[in-house]
Length: 378
Image (cartoon, rainbow, N blue to C red; front, side):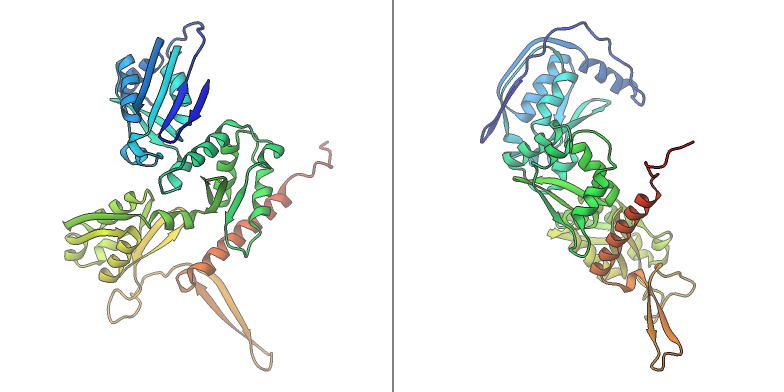
């Protein structure tokens, strides 16, 4: 297989040697329609050649060879160096099925695919999506290298890492400790396992890999600018749609919409023009009294303590959880003043530092709990 990335095109030559025909394997979870698509992907192609086609047309032509629709998600195509105009300069297939070929074609583009009832949808891989910008050829080259190389300490040492983690924790040390427990796999697989365990994410950036917290990643996704018009729509639906545009889960406080005026919760109007998603959430917060915060698992929304009358706390409502305590000794040292701190009383940077400290000590606890290899079991 030969792959050469050009400025505006990708050269791909694939030659698969003939071998015994493998029957299509029924896969669990497939509907009847998607099962037909799966069988088509297993159909062996004698010889196919595609020259100089843009990605959408090239994929569509491959699909026609086996009688199915293959398309690329629009947002995913926009992440390629030249968008939907990025071209596959040459694709040659001999004695191979699309199930064998597609990963080799798509890996070079940082893409993957899903089987649907009416065809195959090509989408960007998670590391490519996390970049939240159009990729360069250097980005794709580095991502492909991560996906192809098996992890070893020597191999991993050739990669440059940039930690965008608070300096108050030893991020490289935490990463190294978790890496030692991650098992085996490609560099990309190991990065996924390690960062997920620590509440971080990773993605390629030119000649190095960036590692940052999930919270920072969500904040970056919420910086995307959108133009949208919502007229007399349920507020929960608007917030859910904005979160979807940021590709981020959203969590609602139970019953929160029932405590808002009906004109607000069921008939809200919001006009956005080149506005960041985060600014949209800030606008909604200012107009309705809702609050939101970014956590590892997504955007959490709830009611401000001032909703409910006269600027005071709403009766009977539980506040955010206690996460800290301040202890101040009296002047004569005979007693101590203690103040419990709730999560929503602390600034974001202090909360982020707290979460990183928790992760670090959890890793230390796991190390202490690990069996001592020097002790022989009876």
